[in-house]
Amino acid sequence: MAYAAVQDLITRYGQQELIELSDRADPPTGTVDAAVAGQALADAGDMIDTYLAVQYALPIGAAPPSVVDAACTIARYKLHRVAPTEKVRQDYEDVLKWLALVSKGTVRLPGVTGPEPAGRTGTVLMQLPDRQFTRKTMRGL
Image (cartoon, rainbow, N blue to C red; front, side):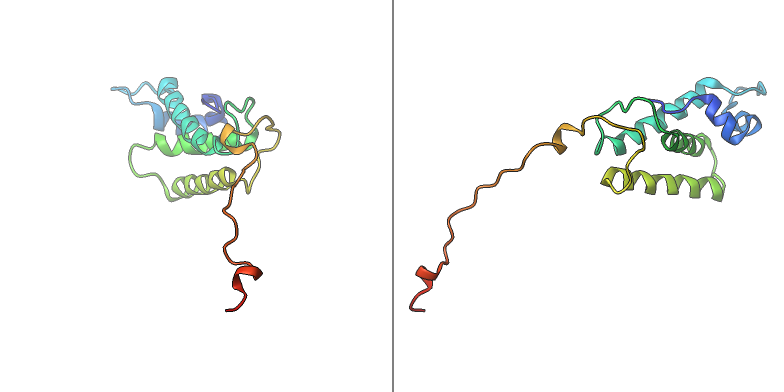
């Protein structure tokens, strides 16, 4: 699921950067290739879902701004065909750390409600064997 739109990328990083990252035509068209940018956003959404699925039932519905920002950051990183800048790489690594905290439940997504995944609800029942060492069995030792 794509959590952001191409316009979100343009708003955050500027049209010129997005043209440079997405325009792969030969010769270049000088415009944003919505298909290339959209695929990067879809890939970012799939990656985010792998983290969110641990704590939330998917789809989560309307994505909070933090998830939209994460999707844009991941998509921007993925759009780099050559080595990304240090800032782009650091932003990407920071988002992955944040997503790991979300998946552990340390960080909760604001405004996201609904059931937890099926494996995370319910009661755990355990059956233990009778105690082997009691006062009665230990007498005389």
